[in-house]
Length: 86
Image (cartoon, rainbow, N blue to C red; front, side):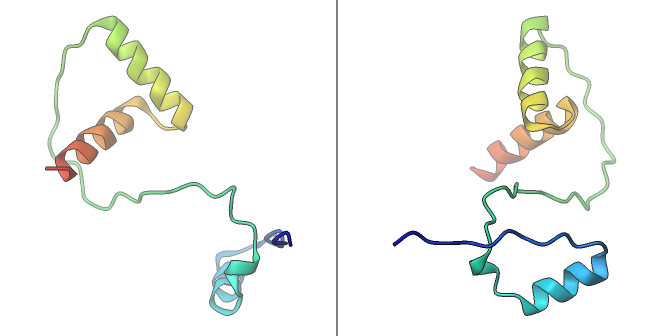
């Protein structure tokens, strides 16, 4: 038996979305198109000046573009992920 899921409705405002999420059974909806989002709340007070070979910078920019984020944010995410593994 195939699991049937519903498409999410269009939610025109934050208030409507909050009401929907608080009352809906989200397990019955198709959430496969959702992407993980990380919110950044901590202010960025320090700067880093880093010299890289052009091919490494080009590769960083390509990976960031594939994820739809600026390359500087991608570098920060890579650093955060590595530090979290320690």
